[in-house]
Picture 1 (cartoon, helix red, strand yellow):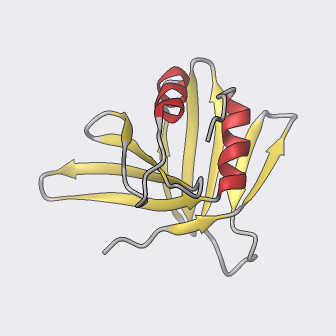
Picture 2: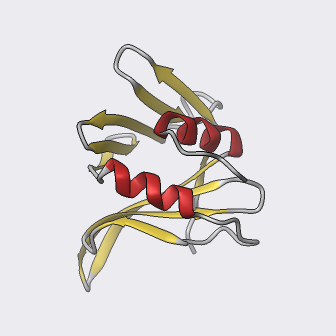
Length: 136
């Protein structure tokens, strides 16, 4: 059974044009998602304490996948950005929450993943930052 950590706070650093998405609960809630631009790529880093998964998908691919999401009754994966070995799985709930699952696949024997859910408000901020029209 997967556990998804809810991230409900976003801050935008205008000097670096980056987003930091965290829990509003404070230090006992350690997961964080950092997103920044690097040319035609988006740097995405998911951390939990000393553990980090960092991916660099093409910005256009991430924008297109997010824009094509349609809400479903259950929060489930609807789109994947990246490759079979390193990807971001995306899904959208009827409540506007965004499933954001970063995964590194070793081979058929296993994988490492960070399972996160962005609240509707945080998702709207991410969509605005990426220039995606939000019609949900």
